[in-house]
Length: 280
Image (tube, rainbow, N blue to C red):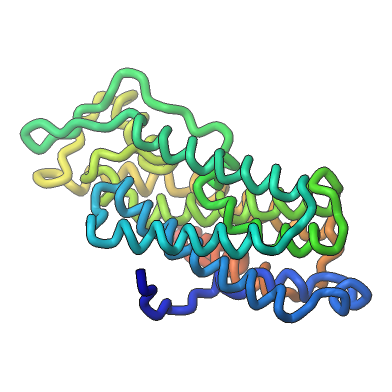
């Protein structure tokens, strides 16, 4: 299958940006060809995950499925041809297995029901206590940077690799939380329960409030306004934890991974908090 030209997203540059966080003594050991391959693998994986996610949301187009499979196969091919140590591929397969499980859990997850325009809230709602778990569907995007450390000789259980994965867990969980906050109403309309709209559902359930997004949408918006400070706090906490992991890894204070992933989320949280003050 011929692959159409892919639009380059910022995720394409993650391996290169990670390389720039390393000491110069390690940077000079990394061949430019390795970074080029990993960058390409990143964008293939990104495209595949986006298409698969559309299917999980019920918006997938069958005509795009072969394309997604080709992207994913290209991602695998690039990584397996790197001939990195066996422990890297054990970790690689584990993270991809976690991705499969996360997708299966989402497929099997509890869904809302809508009757006569009203949302029927289940008696028992899911808990999202471990927000890091939000990163399971996207943590594979951190494998490119991990491959660089494996190439340099770091074992997957080393502090360097464990810390790097923790950075991506917090960063990608923050990104997912921000996305859920942005899409809260659309997710409710699509009967999907997320880490954000579950708080709206619990508040409505506790106060015996009827949610009708067509006839009384303002009620849902008011509840969202009430839970927003908690979401902002959780988002900021995930960003702080990501920054803490970066600091433990001795990254330069100014680096692209923080500037391009974490800083925009922090800025969005600041804007949301400023808007909340206007409402209070």
